[in-house]
Length: 629
Picture 1 (cartoon, rainbow, N blue to C red):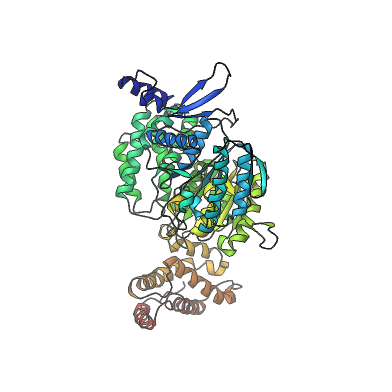
Picture 2: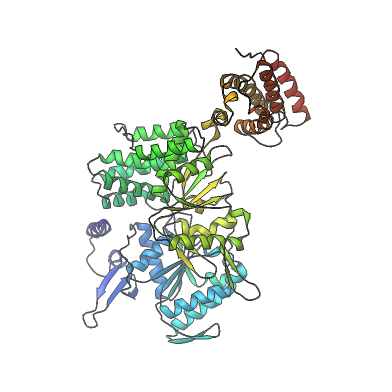
């Protein structure tokens, strides 16, 4: 145990000689009573009984100085029969620290994600169970509950705390007589200052001891985690890992979907651990560099990728990464591209592989990019290639009540929501088939915050009814979004990212797929069609993008799609022709120009149309001269 080794070393250096020294008292200590044979856990002046609750063979938290300080405050709060309230930015370990302290004293700790749909009746039901069982609860994002409800919750918590202080075994709570197990405790975590959060009422704040959680020691955590995965050179590699993320946050562009915090570090460490198990004899630097790339390259813009590669090259100057072997997956991806009439460009294939790599490390990830970045196509290809059962939901097509479920205002009867029903069905399916729940729609704080415990290590959907649905190991949560400008850091830090740009594929890929849908006679004119697009469409769309004011924002890919849709309506009369004559081709040229005008040239104001008209007239003087041989 690295932490125990460091503690002993520190006490030796400070000449700790008595059990009254602060360095000894401030550590978490276990004592066995020789007479009663009961185990107790002490820290500072607080002592708790060890509860022998079987919590499974789960991992433990890496203990840092920040964790120790949080433990001391929480243990002191429990001695005084108060609750604990860790608060701080996303990814600082608030919830995990509470859970790990519960593991240290073998106590069951229920994590519940709070939402603004919780009322005092739902909270009362929760508190009844806690008081009767003696378990701990950690209410995540507690300040998302409405202020009116929080005032009532304060009285409910105060009733329990007063009963514990008075040593009662039975007490009245919300009109019911309950048996009280005094070891119960309530913890809350908060992200102050985020959208949709409220300030706690004073009568509620007085019931908790606050703990300020700041940025943990990334290097120490990475070092201990790498040691646990079997890395021998963990100290040097952990410093390189943390340095690469620090330099990236300082030197790369500022994007809404970038995150270089603790959860990103953990994702890299998990990936490094997986690689170490697969390639035991590979150089450790190669494995760590590959883990860093797998978890980060997918989210960078095309301009930031060279900068990031420069950073990793400076930190790992002698490392050359071998190409990963994805031969089976590549064959399946190419087969699906052919079936769906998609162009297997290298950039598109690379993004499909990055989706696969991200899904193997994170159970929740987002595919981010503008329209025509091929987000939907990439997801369709990888879902079909990996034979995944996908459930697609548009989160903004229904209300919050329809999405998550709600109580009937008259009867207080619970009605299931679309998401709750889908996750419950997928969780109940015990087959090995991977199941993806895909949210195809905008991400905002109104609905995404309810999924915080789904996306982090808890992997639980918490409903306002009090039900908690656990995700199975074969389930993933996928988001397909345009941008994350209104998402909170709490959401962004919890998910992996795959960023896609329209310019990486270009409009030529759309035209190439369109060629495949034409009749044989029209396909025979592929070079003539390509000449029209290269000599007329490309200059025209570049002129519109740079010289006129657009009413609706469109990329070149959007313009070419509109042109092709309009042109297709005019090509039906030529589909039965065996061969296109010169006169027919001249007519098709005219239809192409007509479609160009009413797709590319109309998305502007009157002044822009005059400019486009003059530009197009000048362009066409020498362009429509293609003849058939």
